[in-house]
Length: 146
Image 1 (cartoon, helix red, strand yellow):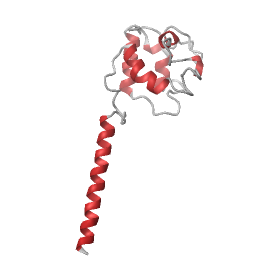
Image 2: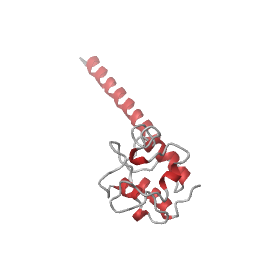
Image 3: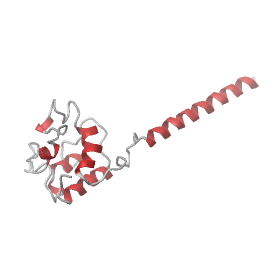
Image 4: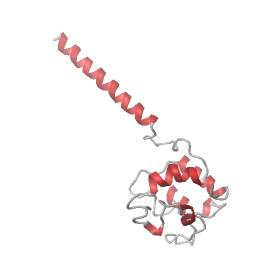
């Protein structure tokens, strides 16, 4: 009986250590985005495009070249021109997608922070508040194309 208990204890320990290793690896690789922006995210268009738009938005069925939801393609070299100073077709208040210098009147922020009925990304885990804040900072800083 003692050998059987030791075996169960050993299996429990191995299971616990394996689980701990998987969780640690997930956190290290950025899979737990609960309260963290992507590693290296900066308030520049190139950083936001690389860390947010391409992996989260420029996908098939969203804002990729094959679908262009809301007539917005974020998958091409023209992603900046498709966003900045362009009227949003979804805004009932006449907001531009990105209004340089004013994140408060930029439809992108309203869609990302949930203050608009259409919350982006659709059907996905929402962007965390710190990521949205970095995007807002880029807009408030003039939404430059770097």
